[in-house]
Image (tube, rainbow, N blue to C red; front, side):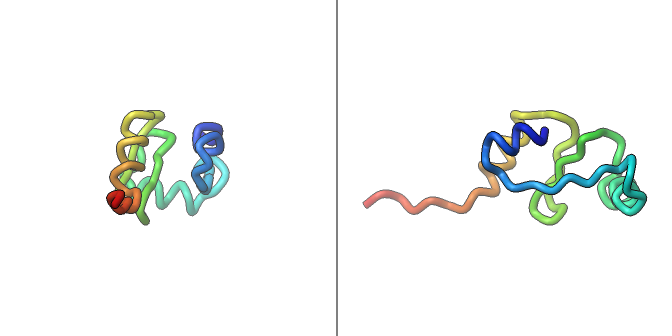
Length: 71
């Protein structure tokens, strides 16, 4: 997933639940973690589990700022 976001120029933060106990706790408790990766958008308001590229792209479109209509 890191290469996907890098290629698209989308900023991201990686939290490794295997190495970071606080990340693992948040993944379990806040996001109901069962699947990795868990992609968190909009401060946790939107979650995509797994490498579901269509769901990620749909979420990115929905969260993108509205573009003004051409005049």
